[in-house]
Every structure is written in structure tokens, then in C-alpha cells.
Amino acid sequence: MDYNYEQTSEVEALDSIYYGDMQILQTEPMHKFSIPIKSEEYDDGEGLACQLVFTYTLKYPEDLPLVEIITDESFDEIVDKTELYNHLMEQAQENLGMVMVFTLVSAGQEWLNVKWDSIKKEREEEVLAKKKADEEAEQKRFEGTRVTVESFLAWRKQFEIDMGIPAKREKEGKDKNKLTGKELFLRDTTLNESDLKFLDDGDAVKVDESLFQDLDDLEISEEDDEDDEDYVPGQSSDSD
Image 1 (cartoon, rainbow, N blue to C red):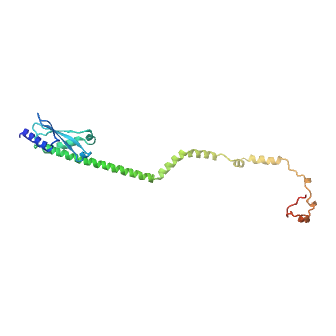
Image 2 (image 1 turned 45 degrees about the horizontal axis):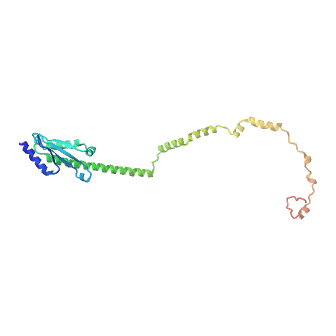
Image 3 (image 1 turned 180 degrees about the vertical axis):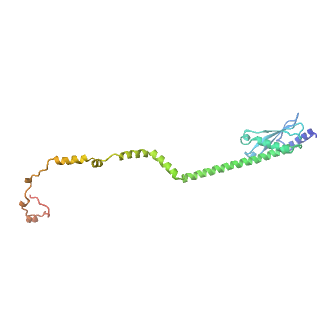
């Protein structure tokens, strides 16, 4: 096989296919050139793009070419270029013995499209998942938290602690042990005895009967009362 002829012919064909995009980096001692690849939506502001750099070996195409992938930071943030390199090497092994750069470029182009479609799908699913989570959170905000027996008891316990209810109950329990005045009176019989002793030792109440007149000696004239214009039965009248 005339390796130089095969290599020169492929370079000329590739330059015709990728005219304006392909860059010849060197021709001696071996051909080296770069061809850009990009996903379909890259020109619209989204997608993936990189440069494939090929260097022929002495016995290419019976030996594999050297392949290098040049990427930027945006590419590396979302794609592992090792995956692309391994994919290209698999394709190269399948085409060993034939000129293969066009096949590798096409395989790389297709890989970027598939990868970008996968990335877009993942992003859309993340957006939908976030939207669903936000809707569920909003729904729960209106519905409130579902109350169970356990959650209610735990809430009530904490509420009583915050309000100081246990301390109040303890104080009330202690106050119940204190006797009221009535309870002390009923329990302590000495109080009863002291009252009775006071009655026994006290001076007897004496009534002076001379202060009262004999009601039978009083003369009341009913006629006089009846002649009185202001007389009201059952009430005594005052004399002028």
C-alpha cells in the first residue's frame, strides 16, 4: 500500500468537504490537521462543540491515526471528553485498513447530537421535577400538616412547656394541700371549746323591764285616727 498516496488523497478530499473549517497544522514529517464538530443547535446558542485533531502515523491507514480532542471550559463542565475519545477509538478499530477520518468526524458529530439531546432531556426533567415539587409544597402550605395522634401529643407537650403549664400545675397541687379556714375550724376542736368557754364566762345579758311600759295602759282612739285625712291603717300618726 502506498501510505503517502492514501494520506495525501484523504487530506485533499477532507479539505474539499470541510472547506473553510478544516485547518492544516503541518504536512511534514506527517500530516496534521483539525476539523471542528458541533451539535445541531450549537449555532443557536446552545449545544456542544469541539475540535478533532488528527495526526497520521507512518503506516496509516493500516495503523490508527493519533486523535486529540480540544475543548473549552463550557464543554468540560457538562461532558467528559474521554467518553467521546473512547467512542472514536471504537469506530477507528472497526475501520482499520481504510481511510477513516471522515467516518470518525461523522461519528463524533453524531455522538455530540445524541449527548446534547440527552442533556436537554435531563434538564427538562429537572425543571418539571422542580415545578412539581414547588406545586406540591404550595399545596401543602394551604392544606397544612397532617395531624396524627403522636404529632398532636408531641405538640401539646411542647406547647404546655412553652406556656409554663407544668409549673402552674405543680404549684396548684401544693396549694391544694393547704387547709382553708373552715377546714381548720372543723379539724381543730380546740376552737370550738374556746368559743363555748367564752359564752360560759361572759356576762349574762340583763334586761331592765322598767324601761318598757305596760301596753295595756295605752289608750288608742281609733275614731281620732279615722278622722285624720292622712291616716293610714297600720301606721301611727304624729301629733302637731
